[in-house]
Length: 344
Image (cartoon, rainbow, N blue to C red; front, side, top):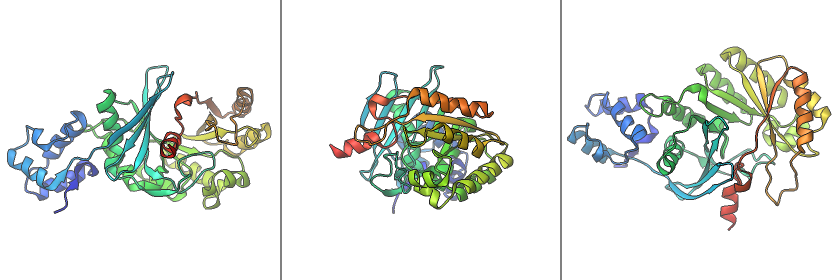
């Protein structure tokens, strides 16, 4: 009999599994507490469960783990983790610390990425597979075990496109949100997407309070298709219409991400075009200064140009922030540490 990874189950799913075994379903909450609150990795140590039930769990389930391969810490306390999965695959997670003391963990959702945005290292080697629910959850558990840190916020902005692994990401959010597990509020969980329109429409039907962040990086189709090939399948104006419907349906603000690359997408005209594209509904903009590898042909925009870009958006009534760069010295952008590790 193949044992099942117990971390792949939401609380409601585990209640059904346990009920089918003849045990009372409330035991699922106890198991969640042992695994997600106390960090226990052995069914035999779950002492408030009947001994016969613990034997049932041992015979039918297992508790998966990930391995810490390497970590790097920058001067601003940002820490990046290279993690090994049970099949030998490698993913990344990052811990970010705000000036206000808030801790955010950036987690991966796939091994590789199908969409190969030109400024991102995640898709350079292609797509291999989706992460399971347990592999998503285990990133947070491993860092808590290693560093004793419980993040205030979770962002799906690591390796992979979260909405391309929709079911596993949604199930993991149920677990992050569960009072029996991590008890992280929905508004402190962010899904970042390159713009998978069918999945955004599906997400809006859940009417959750999660934050949605959409990567744009260009104000018109030709440049965006060059930077982000996904635009050929889901063109910019269709994406903006979908975002407007999402805001109307959920009454939630959308964040647009815009990476500024010198001489590529940072002109003042492009700022004006961008403002026209997105104004008129509840959104805000994060401007991000390009974080490049030494081998990159592109350079980050100057701080002066970034500020002028922001000024134009702000004058057009669009709430805009410049995301403070963190972890530059440790290759904290998506896929950079993994790319260097695999090259060595």
